[in-house]
Length: 394
Image (cartoon, rainbow, N blue to C red):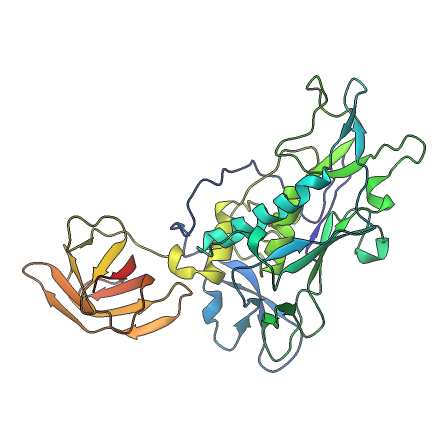
């Protein structure tokens, strides 16, 4: 479970996490709105009532499944650190097509790769702050040369251990600066076994290895690896295994939560070798954000603007707990609010002037920061949802 595995077809290895999609640039700012199809569900792990093993269910609103609690990391932003040890790769040498030797796995890059991977997940829900500056409640990551640490050491690039255990709390907690679960401590193990690397003891060359670059390794004359050498992106493994720890599941395994939809992204179960690093797909982002910040995934951008024409975008200035919105093109009969986690903050008092299309809302029970405001209108079947960044000016 939670593995990056390999399918030995030609030089491609199908790891239980074979990334087959093209890379996607990660250029959006933290906390950006993500357009997610409300009809597409994703697989999540849930704690059933009482005790017992977690169950897998399809959901497009995992924080509000009647009778179930979704399993996730309860202390965000998430943090992860790689711990050095005797099982670390000390040489990852291969050959390019003309016989030049190449080191494909650079230990000096490991920490930055971990930081970048966890920061990408955190950034989606505006959990800011760099992982490099975090010091407590961090997930431990280690290398292992022991085949018994893997379900199948010949095909698993990495594995998430001690992930999901049901206890009094549904999820991973932070206690005294340490991550805890009822069955121990969560851990990501990276594969440095002979079973995977197939290291030649005479030449010292590896046949298979994780690589650390932002592109496929090449020799001094830009030649690709010679036939018979296969590499897999450590960046992909980090994103994938961290996704498992954060509560995501393979979308292309049972249960199939979106039949007929082509599955894309870093959380697919398998990855081909000798490919450039991949990135988070829209499906990856939606699955994560529906779990940790659903407010940012379900906004309908109707033409509703602030009362202050000098204030653009999402910013809504609040004075004496009153926020004013204009150009509301419907007869408003109720207003409610939700926080970034999707929790209902309740109905809000309001006054609506249909002639001027001006809506005044009482925000006394809403803190500064992002909030999803939902307007129900007469004669309109679906509500209007608008995300604001609430900021008090007095």
